[in-house]
Amino acid sequence: MRQNQAVKMEPEPTVRGQELGQLLRAYRERAELSLADVGARIDASASKISRMENGKRYASTEDVAAMLALYRVTGPQRAELLALARESGRRGWWQRDTPGFVERQQTLISLESRARAITNFDDTIVPGLLQTGEYTRSMMIESGLVADDEVENRMVTRLQRHSVLLRSHPPYLMAIIDELALCRMIGGRDVLRRQLQHLVELAARPNIDIRVVPNTRTHAGVNGAFTVLRRAEGSPVVFLENLTSSMFLEEPQEIERYEYATRELLTHALDTAQSVEHIAAQANRLDVEGLDPHEQGPYRDQLAEE
Image (cartoon, rainbow, N blue to C red; front, side, top):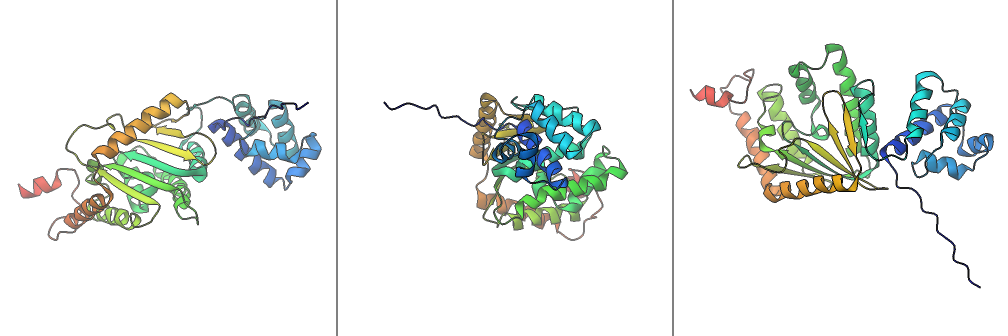
């Protein structure tokens, strides 16, 4: 008689679970232990350890505690990983207890490294993955929100994010930018011009599509910037950010709202060729001779005419 055997399904990877797995892998590699070494010492298979590190299996607090003892991880780091283990199956993550910007960005960097496609909408600035170094630095300094001694640390983190677009098989990036973001005079005329020229160059890459939403009507991005990350394994994740915390959304109904907003934005955006032409034309206007490159403000051209 044929017996039906239930197929054991792997759990859907969560952001918390993948974060925990990546940290566990880093500590294991630092301890110079193989998957088989760890499995033998905590009475588990190497494949089980591997699935935990990849976020494909929820790690129990007992297993994590045993691994951390093996890796000699103590203090706040141990407490952080045990807390992640207790909640590794939960969807959605509001990171408001993470100490600072650089630490919070590591989760985003991890997700971007795993993504097969990224959709980024920004309404006030050029999207982070497409920023030049001088544009990023000027934005931090001019905002008045980043301490001088913190700027360089954030610059290093930004360069970490950029590396995802430089690898041999980068994710597909759809960058949707409100037209007004291309006019914001961050860093002065020359910095902005070079940033726009950089966008034109990036748009020539086969994995990057830049679309500009004209400033002619209210659109689906009125509630602010967002990023949809489509993972190679697992459902999409939406990333949101404010001054003091980051939020990762994983519930299907929330993802659908942002996917709907993306479709609506693309409905009103210029097509790819028109978007690149618009950006190039804006860069050319900034290159006009006879205007003070140090003047600031979105109404500078209007004031110059007056």
